[in-house]
Image (cartoon, rainbow, N blue to C red; front, side):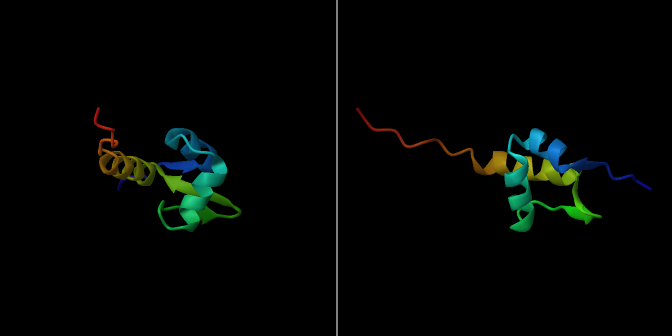
Length: 68
């Protein structure tokens, strides 16, 4: 049986490069999967990695540049 590694909001925010408040907002919006244990939110490492992969894949567009 595979063990799930959990991250705290602080650890997840650091991994994502976001503030703790923004990370909580992503959870409330359903864009990042988290579980409330007691009064604390916990996120599986795989959920954080999946979110990063999704964001990296969708931001591969090149910015518009003015033609000179």
